Every structure is written in C-alpha cells, then in structure tokens.
Amino acid sequence: MAIITMGAVITAVRGSVGGVVFSANKAGPHAKIGYRSTNPKTGVQRLTRARASIAGRNWTALTSGQRTGWNALSAAPPEVLYNSLGKITVISGFQWFAKITCRQYAIGATISTTAPAGSAPAAAASLTAAISTTTATVTYTAGYFAANEYLVILLAAKFKAGANVASSGYRLSGYTLSPPNSTFSFFTQLQAVYGSPVAGQKMFIRFAKQLLNGLRSPALSVVVTVT
Image (cartoon, rainbow, N blue to C red; front, top):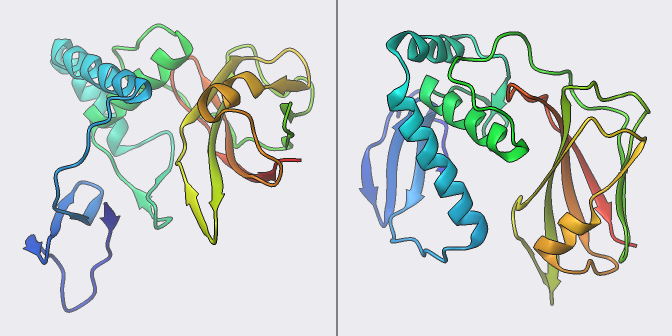
C-alpha cells in the first residue's frame, strides 16, 4: 500500500484505475494494488492475527466510558506516530487500544482496559549495536532503563542476491524488562528469525523504550553491517 498526498487541484480520489485502488482513512489518502494477497500463514502472522482478534473482542467488552477514554487518547495522543512519508498520522481510539494491547501481550503485561495516562518515555539514546556472525549486542549507559521500562528491538535484514537487494521488513521483535547491565545480547532472537548472520549483511535496527502500560518512546534507528 502506498500513502499519497493530494495537491491543490485534486483533493480526493476514490475507486480503481488500472488495477490501483484509491481510498482513504483517518490517517489520510492511500493507494494499493487491487489483487488478492497471498496467505502464507506463518507463525508470526498467526500470532499477529490472534492478538488483533483478541483486541477486537476486548474492545466490544469495554464500557462506553472506557471507549470514550480511548477516543480521547486519540484526540490527544501521548506518542507522535509517523507514516512512511515521515508525516504525522492520526489513528482512532480503537486502533490505539489494539496497538497498546499487542504491545502489552508481547511483554506479558496485564492488558489495559482504560487508556494509559501520563507521557511516553523519552527517545532512546546512547545505544550502540554490534552484530557479527556469532554475536549480536546492544550497549547503553548503565541505569538507562527504569524498573518499569522495556527495551524494544525491531530489526530488518537486507540480503544481497546478485545486483539486487531485498528487505524482509521488520520481523524481529525482542523485549527485555529493565536490562540489568550495560550490554544486552539478542543473537538468539536474531538467529531464530533470520538464521545465522552473514558477514557484510546489512541490519536495520530500531530501539525504543516501552512502559508496562504500553506507551513507547520514539525509535532510535541504526544501521549495522555484520562483521
């Protein structure tokens, strides 16, 4: 799916042209190819769908007051969300509920029925990543994480195939509560998703802090070459 920005002459497009479907949602207009997508039913895909299904069922079980609270969160969000064009995007109260639910399931926290209060953590900083064919570590200042803060690792790998470079997308998600030391290893998670890293391979990593209530800091992005 592609996100599009309208100009002064054309302000909205709906329908399909040449196999491209134009639509819009709360975040703005977008376009996508009109084809029936594949359904590989991977483990990650099944897990994501299960969590989304749970969020949908839980939303219907909320009181009207609780849903009002989530909608208020949407009107004054604690995090700034960006689309693929780097522009601020807005999501609904239900979408916030689903996002927070999935984040809390990932770390094994109690699922919130009320919208989280307070602010999101500050942006991750002073983090250094290093990946070799046998190790993968992130180093940070000791004491950087508070007792209720998780380190979130989102990682994508690029594999070279002749002259082409293809990205698998952000598939690896690693979480650890308040890492006690100044170095955290995520080689086991990396290897489980991508297999053994290859020297020269590019890894695109995003680090963030996440609270038990599901609020997350802006991500710190780094690029690492496997040694």
